[in-house]
Image: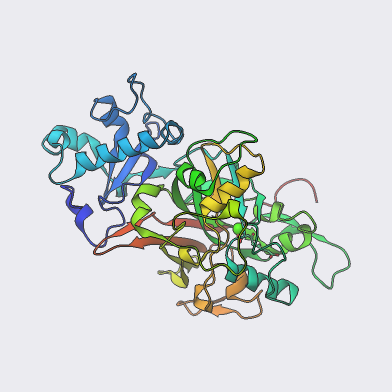
Length: 424
Ligand SMILES: O=C(O)/C=C/C(=O)CC(=O)CC(=O)O
Ligand SMILES: [Ca+2]
Ligand SMILES: [Mg+2]
């Protein structure tokens, strides 16, 4: 689809007219507001709503003058579809000319992406992280338990744990190395201090738009319909803290200190042409988890690492979201079916995405095989885990014929641990 915003028609842009992802931005010290990426510009949809060019609510109440997309998410799929259709009409080469032919309105409504600061695109109500990548689960078993055999439940249940919504941050937010307890295998007692095995996890985040009732089960198809869109997600992980704390209740502090998401929510509608089947089942799933349509998406993913002062980043992994065993719809169905009310703003981490070859591993734990096999960056430096000053970036794009649907970088720099507090 062609737009009159020229930069949206380039094969290299992450934000062609087919994408139209949703973010929250500022360009100065005004209040953050909703925007839509198009080529190298942001469309200020809060302004267009104020001008009456976009009208979502029957009563004329604004929905886009807010520093989050939750209001639109909760309004439901009819509103999602209406907004997308209106945006395509306003931005298409041969669509409604109201914006295209009004130079003053255009100048006010289109802001260069390069001038904008991006904020959290939605209020995260709750955050759940799954463990649904088969290669990743086998690698973690081999590394930590001496065998790639999957846990007995793994092929039957999308395993997950309840994470922290309060520490989910937008790309570009620095993360301090966490403090915590750990115990080396040969040590007699645990010690307290900065994490020594700081890691990333390459994941996709699914964002729930509409709610389900407490106690009310839903089907996988209903769950799929509740998903508003997707972001890239880095589940920062403190492996030494995690290893000491996680039995028998699962991850706690080792994964609670920070989770970074990409600034743009790519809608399920934009990703629809890239739907792809979950893989063949090793064990037949129980009927409540079966899907009637392809539940995953073909999204190429990449991880880069850049030490402080280095002039370029090194690609350390490349894989694809289609490597997952369970879809977000299956995960959401499983979550709700047990009685949990799921709400607009619920964020579901896919689980770490790894493919079969080493170049496809989505964590440093796997890439360095728990620190036993250091890898070399383009700068000549070696790494096992993250060092202070390193910047880790996730990138992702669904690749169509002559265009791509991107998410914007999901980037975070690691700062030293904060140790100046009184307790010793
Ligand atoms: O198998 C383990 O002991 C640990 C696994 C993980 O840390 C993975 C995790 O948190 C879930 C995921 O992102 O896949
Ligand atoms: Ca994770
Ligand atoms: Mg986390």
